[in-house]
Image (cartoon, rainbow, N blue to C red; front, side, top):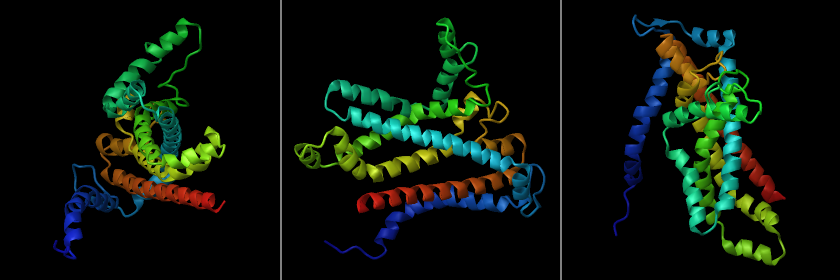
Length: 292
């Protein structure tokens, strides 16, 4: 068997590197360049320096969009990880019934965002929605799920959790099935109950999986667009205008390519920063757990 040439690994990475460079790195660099120009897609671009960044910060628009996106992301990550782990632990068993439930839960994840948005729009409409009509029929109070500025963002977050929990569950199932059964059996023989086995064996061994699911769920929540476009169009009163939808508005509604590019650069920096903080927090927690 011939030894691999020193350049073989780089040759194998080349196709992926080309795709990343063409569709991710180049557009990001172009957005950074465009953020220093005022351009409406119709006239020639005009160099304005960092004026777009000053405007976004001075008007409070950047802070408002960032806080809405962070709130949305925190809710989505917290509940999708919690529910996904709980379902994985409950359904990590043999049998046709458990397999059916696992498939039913995961099926929501493979449905398109547009279909999910239309389904929940039919359910959550304040006047004719199935949920509101059912609550009124039995005399319970209802809410303007999509037209109340204080509620709409968390309604979208709940719909997102419903959709992606199946993804988290599948990843956690893979992590649970990777844990040696001998360790759990030995702990049971030593008298550890189910909760102690989970807390002292399952949870520490699942930490890398939790970090992975949390990071990917955070990235997914920050990419929210379809569900906002279908269900609320950024309203009411911009209460559901998260980063990607704000970028869409700036380009296709306001024809402000430079300002949209500035939002894109800030959005990317914020996402990278939060991902690094999240991974650091999980690693720190894992080290402290090992030390104790």
